[in-house]
Image (cartoon, rainbow, N blue to C red; front, side):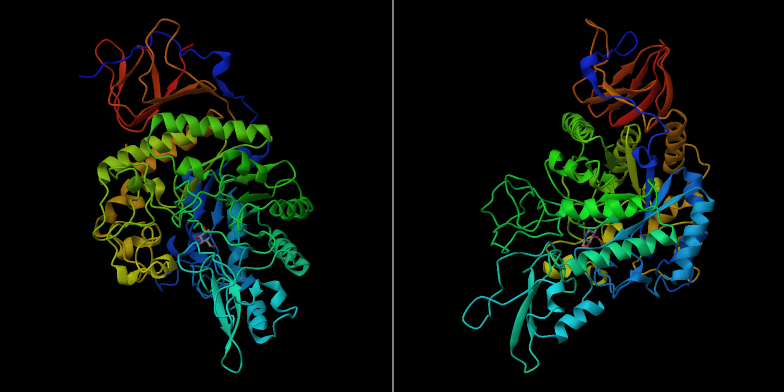
Length: 593
Ligand code: NOJ
């Protein structure tokens, strides 16, 4: 038995409900932009080798304009042995032959700009590849030389240096140190790698490292990029002396508040980790901001920083630092109305306090795709990959919720990030053969974590073509699940009710109504004395649009005459003129005048 709540008139929003004041659509483009993440190896393959490439992206850019986004962010395409899918860079100023050439990068930039799309590229400053010229020189050099001083080489502990210099663990599992071998075959110094052993950490206290990256920024700024997404932005500077720390930090987890546990520990001031969120990182971003300003005020820096609480994250977007920081607390909140209201409110409070605009994101190349996350029995859980023998998500329920979550996100003022394929409602590949997994986390944890391959499967473009149109030969670096034809772009384009059409409509309305630069005021659904929305509702007003996400089993009933602009699933008017909004549905409604 459910009880419906029927607000009788326009939504009430007292001044105290105002969480964020509206801005202007003319302010900095990034403050309200929708930015689409392209994962180059899985977007579109022009060469037929089964790996996506830059010409493939250029040829498909019209998909992005058709969708209605403002910009794209390209994950790394630089020269790299691909030990971590390109987040292990061997040459920051060149394109890996797997993806094309520098000329292909220029052509992509030119075409995107012609289409009115801005382009953000990934920058990986915390570590290089072990095949970077600097690291090769470091290995060939003696301890104590300038070549070694670009990285974090240290002598080991124990009688003969046989123990690592400290007890830090790699984010990908296993120790964060690897020992080198001397020319005579004896054990040498150790080097630090917060991620894979093939990703040695740079020493950011070395001015040469700082100068090199400012030069890399200029190299790409001159080629016309509109900004940089900064990988592991919270990790560059380590605490003096590299002190022991018993925690383990996981990019995706990060939960257990027990500083003595060797389980996941949140990176927060309560549990300070000596390798993350050190004050010194902010000097780096201040100097980068100055470099960007040499090229005008429209180029941006985006922090990938897994830092909590939100006030700490906001320090990365102070006026003289970066422009945006990914809102991972929003991504990891799951499907709970009260938790969502809290994270939304906290995000505005923290961003407004430093004059920045918040960002919103539900999926990326590091997490289980949100239709699959939300189809789990605990929709707030965040496994690092899903495989054979794991709980399999409810695909239909997950997609139903994911569409509601997306519609909620796209109505929030600020900037939103989309991950390629989410506009198709693409689920995670959840039963990938373990022998095909490439993510180093799978190997480094002995298979305990499945890793991120399942969200990186090549996109389906045309239902009836080999590899669903991803590559001309039908080759794909990871297999696509059989049923993916139903999610192909050509299977959804122009089909009313498809996820692609939902995203297109949402982005068009968001633009038309200036929701990205709008404001947010909570509404409880009624005037004083009239019924409220049920507790499991997230409801707010942004400009002239009332947004109601009903996460509860109680239907929310919109008053007679409510004009539904868009809904994540069909809603129908009852005979008396009211409109019930069922469970796990979000609606955008014209605020009654
Ligand atoms: C964050 C990136 O998003 C992820 O894919 C990568 O593995 C790590 N940083 C290390 O670079």
